[in-house]
Image 1 (cartoon, helix red, strand yellow):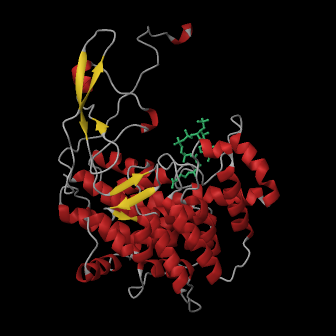
Image 2: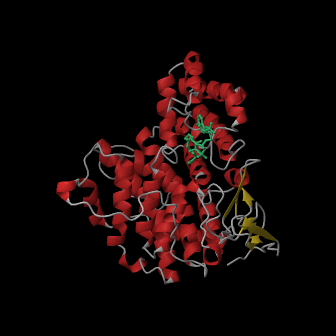
Image 3: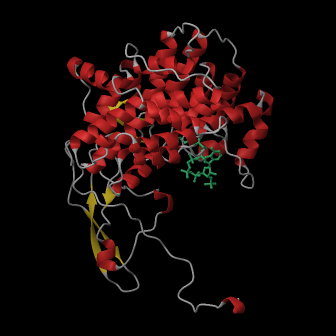
Length: 438
Ligand code: ACO
């Protein structure tokens, strides 16, 4: 499946079972860059052993050409392009095309792609009824899981995963309709009428329009806010095999339809250890309330007996500053400047907290740096996005990554159903106990 040249070599490692003295040579696989991997796919057949790696900290689950992260130095690249360059010079449509097709589009390709996305933004009218079935106070992520899953009941002509054209149509539909569904979930929760998409607006502008315009007055879209929104979408577009992307791949490995797979990804993203962290950061900053209370919260974060963690800090892969957090911090200042917010108390607490944590031995030793979620909540709040919608925005942006990874998996000739094994600690076989003897 590699279109980038792999530097695969013939190195091996030898595994010796000290109890039997038997040895097995295992091939070492190399990618273009990054750590090499020991191929253990034949291990069980040859030795009867499984590998054991809860949380997959040392496991490469697939081959991929899409995204590369070097967590030690804080590098993120999509198809070889640094995230900082993409955030500075591209727009979200460029990045979507790049993730889906492997190259940045030329002018013609971009126009065609943008048109296709734009013309898929409307939802089947009957889907409006779905929203009305939810309680008004439903969390919008709950609505997203339900409505995106329900797309498989509406778009039958793009659920055949074996047809490349249908796969592409489903991908475009998902990218195009996610902002519409997200904005509808918001409008429903505040009791305002749904706002239809507009074809003369960019992806980010259209989202702001559907979120904030009302039929009774003109809504002016600020170019600075539209650019900031577009950049937030770029920064969240893909992040290799994280929990939600792996969920999408695992769901898709059974040949489930793409809408069902993306609904599974949304469910996984919802958790506060993953996409839900941006919402949790804001709650934490509010709870801290003032700079002088920061030491108390730092102390709690370090206390093994206290479940509290500094939200927006730490990452499974980044053991350095998350490059997205740097761009986000810059964007945050631009947005607050545009909105004339000279002193944002939450931003001030966030910056003081970051400074204290980065100098604290506990965070230094464990290499805990701010991640993308640390600043995104502050920008989104300043833009008027309610906290409960933060993770929804993440889902809108990540949809392109999910569909690109899902398509890559379906098109990989090595693809098989994902079926991990386990180390069983339960009872071995025992005799059944009748009810009167228990
Ligand atoms: N605050 C305090 N301590 C922390 C934090 C934190 N935010 N994050 C990790 N640690 C500590 C752990 O207690 C652990 O200490 P120990 O070795 O003494 O037991 C050590 O650092 C390693 O942490 P793990 O939980 O083992 O690391 P893991 O890779 O499993 O978890 C995670 C990564 C979930 C992101 C974690 O850092 C965390 O919970 N952070 C806060 C939530 C968050 O911001 N999530 C967003 C992630 S980015 C994203 O999804 C977009």
